[in-house]
Image (tube, rainbow, N blue to C red; front, side, top):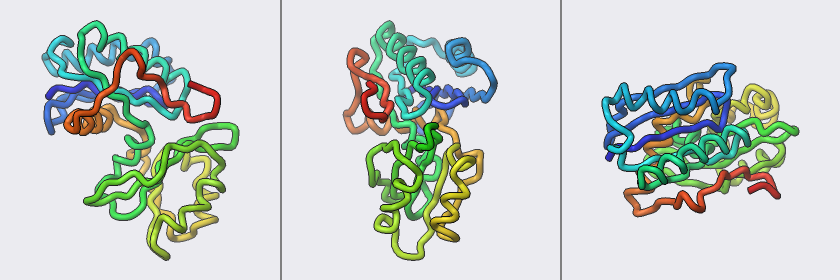
Length: 226
C-alpha cells in the first residue's frame, strides 16, 4: 500500500512516501519559509523521487496537530484537497503520537512535549516497547500540570522518556521536578516525520479506520478552537 504522509504542524515540514513497510522517499526541511510555499513542491519532489503519479497513491495521512495553527491548517487543507481530487482515503494522525512513535521501542513511559507558547505545552503520555499504548489524550497545559500525574503513570524510580521541541524551553523545569528519572531523546527525534505519519496512517487503515475529507479538521487542543 502506497501512502503519502505529511506534517506541517511545526517549523519542520516533512513529506514521505511508504510502500508497505518500506520507506520509499522522504523530504524534510527546517528553513525560514512558509509551509504554504514549500508543501506542494515537496510533495511533487517526493512523488518524482518515487517515480509514481499521485493517482497511484492508495491513501494519504496528515498530521492534524496539535502544533502551529497556521501550519496545521495548511497541511490538512492541502491533503483534503488532494484526496478529494484523487478520490483516495485520508487519515488524520496526532502530531504528538507521531513524535512519541519515534521512540516506540523504548520501554517505559514516553512523553512528547511541544512548545505551545503562552507558558504552556502540548503533551501526551504513551507506553513504549512491544505493547504500544496511549495513556492520555492530547493535552495543552502548563509544564507543572503535565508533570504532576506522571508519578502514577510510571513505576517508582523508573525512567520517563521525553521527546519533542518543547524540551529546549522546558527541559530544565522537567529535570528539576524529576531529576535522574527524566531521560531526553536526541534532538534528531524531536520532530514529527512524514514517514512516521504515513506508518501510523497505515496502521489505522489496516484496522479499517479512516477519516472523511468532508469532516476531518485540525486538532488544536486549545479550548474554543476547531
